[in-house]
Length: 221
Image (cartoon, rainbow, N blue to C red; front, side, top):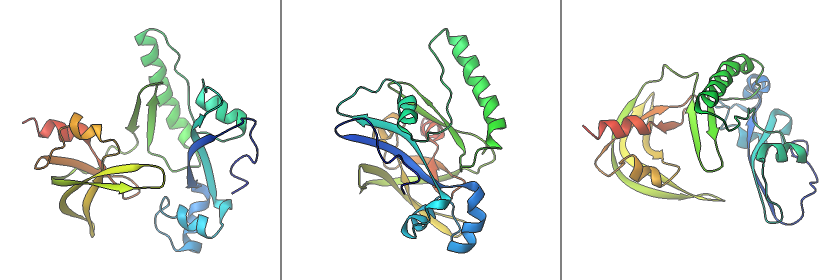
């Protein structure tokens, strides 16, 4: 793990860095044979258990500290020696200028993807107060539909997650009966009430993902 993160940083006190481990695309085909895994993201835990850190990459995307105000998250992480996701800054300006910057960023992503050695299918637009995840390169996905039957809390090491309980849907031999909501406010904002319809798709790593806008629209009818 030492090769993935800096051994020392110059910030005193409590510091929390959040990031994600992934298996490099260039290592996956060989590691799939060695580990017997079939899912690139799920096999990260296998690599950790076997100390196969040579196939892993760690990308940090957030930092919180009690002793210092962080003005520019990614710049600070890079200064400390962490690797971060590919990003571009969109400085404040007129609306048309910001939209043009975002368009140019999307265009450049297609060229950058060829050299990007990590599994990805999306982009995040982020400000100081809001974060919006957009999925790209996956336009041909199927939509699946079910009925919401309840809610359940799951407890992780650092946070509590909310999942929707749904009427089971069989997709390619796997039964889907729960969907991650991520943020409890999404239940209210998108009218994900018990008895309502929920629309979801399957991500490239075989994980179901709610289509919030479609679910909201179908329940308005």
